[in-house]
Image (cartoon, rainbow, N blue to C red; front, side, top):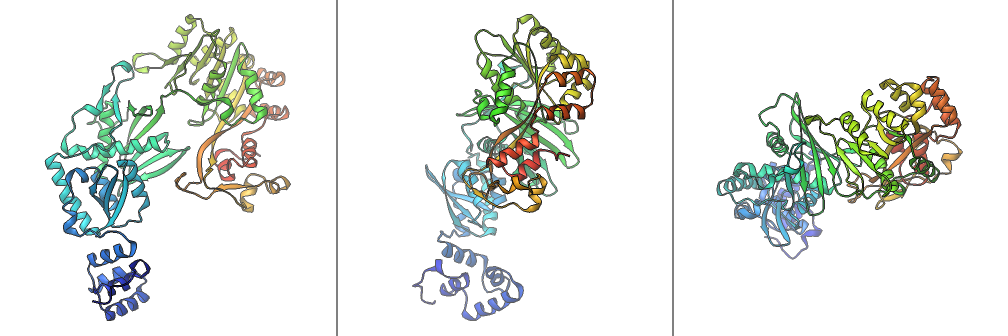
Length: 576
């Protein structure tokens, strides 16, 4: 053996193997020559030439990186209670296995200790500091096969996310929720239960609003919608798909045997910090069933109008109309554009002991003190129209209708607003002017629309630049042209973007802010509506009276250094 008085962390892998007497100088020279031709890793070349075995390479890598090396035999000595802390599918996916644990630390043998995503997820999953060690990939896979079989036989499995409780309940049985976390789970099911808990627990920590579980050709894709954009978070093997979907169905009290038809359900997750209502949709696809879980935070509403993103002049206009004694205020935009959040913030600002404020929603997304909130339950016949007809007898002053979906709901809303009530609602439309024509398309007469509407507002959400990695940059000419900023105005803007960091998961964005297009129903606009004018005429008149478009509102956020050109282009349409 050559002299061992050296620092392996300063040596190349081949030199470490040579110094440890695991290869000869001649073998190293031949391997380096082969590497020149094939451009592979020296460790793989040494193994392919028969000069070293996988354990030699892993041992040298551990020396080089300053980690402990775990032999294949030692992997099999890992206690069942420690191995059971990590779901089997996750261990296989990332080629790792827990080998020891204390109250605060988990020691994990890995084939690739540079897998930072795996280390970060494990820390969140187990709530322990992770100490990596190095073992061979084949040794880890063999240990996983043996140890998890032993765990299933001995039933020594530890629940990972212990502070999550799952309550299943039907829409018409809110008071009779069943604690699903206390339902007995079979030994074979326990790893899937832990994986399901991990998927949902991570979604809560990452501020996700939706979870997508879908079958791909070779794996299951688990994606979270964070700040309005889907991000793939983990890829369990295909064999885990049926178990994950079944777990979701059990929590939602759905039929696990039915795989041909769509199903909808719900359940509630309670943790130490919050309570989240989960709306579940199961859809059969050609690759297998897809599950989408929408997460609705049921904790108290903390937003205010000042924090939503209104420009000062827009906020003055909006506040002027939400304090009117009667009329209708409609916010339009696609699903997930923050319409309900804006309406909640408006109600929170105007509520008082002198007013009876009632809402009809599906679902109730936030709970507001001092406001009567009605949850639509179509399964028992409690529809929007039925609830609204009965609210008439409740002596209301102000009313929020979650969404105008059909002619009957629209007709009731209009009558409310014309009989001395202030009505807030939402509608699916592309911009403020098309919201007016959409109401008419639903079946409301133009003279009624012109009489009842006070204000129409279109809304979108754009992602904020991450404050932890925000830095100035120079956009390309093409990017400037997309927003029409290839002019004097554009040259005077200081542009920012996020370079990507741990805080924002490498996206460069963290959080969202609203952009708004406000159309006030002044006399000229009302006359156009009375005369059944088309959408373009209404839009031109609104622009003439000073309406700021969604695209322009986005550009203003770019000027303030809040968002990026790419976000505004993604969220708004080109103005022609």
